Image 1: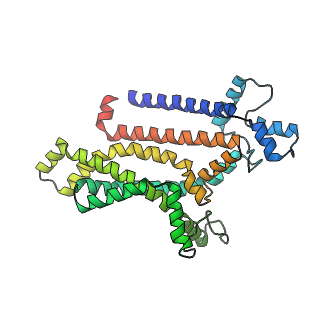
Image 2: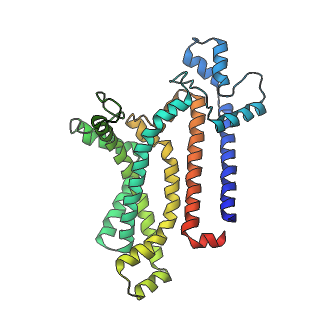
Image 3: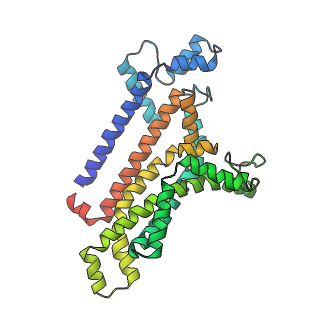
Length: 329
């Protein structure tokens, strides 16, 4: 119980620190939201309207920094994240995030889980069959692909499957122009076709890390006494590999998966930008370019919470799966 309470305390402290930094950064950056808003509207808004927009994000004239900070924390907790002052001027930030979130979860989330699952299985087999042809070929190849930049892999896939193959797979946006969004087959097929290349980019550049990590964990675990005891008992290779070696070698990878799932909300910014995929990563890029302070602040807060929640869930899962953690707790 003490272990779980410590983790919850760490979560609360880290979240408070992240929100505080998120509050201070826009106020320490060169320029100001007012200047960005005036440039965006080119004088179309009156000073009163400008003040009202800025007030929605806590920039109220006459307020002290402590008063702004108190109101900011209240708005972050209650979901009152203000309105956009960037390219989507006047739209509620919650609406923009709600529109982009499903695309990022569907693309980056599925691709991350797929890369983790396939990479872990290959790593298990490679570690079990250390020195085999499979171990000599697959891990080095995928480690090399993981070192390639996201944008380069994306451009190569576009060159091969779109340019060279006369548009065999689409290279931009979330779905085709002629598709009508809704629960219909045509729209579903269009969404899947547009997701193939960006998803393949993420899998190709992420799978090598999972393979190498799991392989090394397996090799270390295979040298443990309990694995030798299982072999001495005459248990089948399959049971020893999965029930004894892989089960224990998997635990360190669980933390990596939690971090990866937390970072899913960042939307692999470069991938979404190259493919003009309308997810959170693309939204964050546009908010940075257009100095959209309310949207940047809300997205940063969302990313922080996602990572912290994923790590917290990982801690609870480790506590449940690993008796050593329960003993320490």
